[in-house]
Image (tube, rainbow, N blue to C red; front, side, top):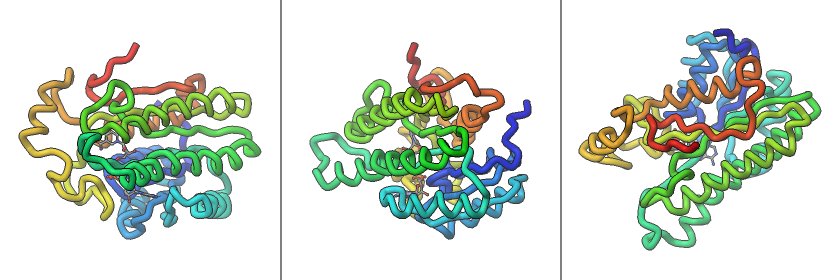
Length: 265
Ligand SMILES: NC(=O)c1ccc[n+]([C@@H]2O[C@H](COP(=O)([O-])OP(=O)(O)OC[C@H]3O[C@@H](n4cnc5c(N)ncnc54)[C@H](O)[C@@H]3O)[C@@H](O)[C@H]2O)c1
């Protein structure tokens, strides 16, 4: 199926690692011009090299801290100069440290809010300033199944991802008139094949940082599709939603790509 993404300019935040990396590489297969916006430039450059090999029209890395509005403005201004325009944005950066709410501290809440929510606001604000005058665009934000049904040890993060879903729906309603579509994709547990596919700051840098092998087996058993998610499972959904050609009438939606963990009617 032709997604009509050839030579389209796409920014993927957090693309130096795991899910963002897979999204960048999937856009590469479609021949897009890819900007990897991440704190970790070294890992980002490895993804950019792979993206060029996989068929990207071009690929660049721009060191970006999404929690800093000036840094995000620099990202979009640089992309406008190098690739001419920004047609699609994937808000992929996110972070969590699993623990029960009673174990969390106000310092941890602030860090979670900055990375998972303020970063999204910064990127959306600047993206709209570019996309409205450009005549349209697509935004896909990576949320989580933790946003949809509550998840023990993810209280603050899950709440912020629920806020992400609601925020993107409002942005979709406010900006449909400008031909801008906004959707969310919710992964479940989604694990890189090797630690080579992660960046320095990745939640998955240590193989058992999040879950033990026994826990992975137990999680897989609970899923209707009986396996843990791969980053490519999420990337396929994101690239589909980013394509105006095949998803041009889809906006304000929240789609789980999680092996059936959440089933929301
Ligand atoms: N992997 C999962 O199981 C899972 C499940 C549900 C939702 N998600 C969501 O999917 C997205 C990607 O998760 P992942 O597992 O690939 O994460 P990851 O930790 O492997 O990678 C995140 C990337 O974001 C970058 N980053 C972190 N803070 C940044 C900042 N302030 N500015 C710019 N870059 C920054 C890191 O350098 C890293 O390269 C996140 O939004 C996450 O919440 C992941």
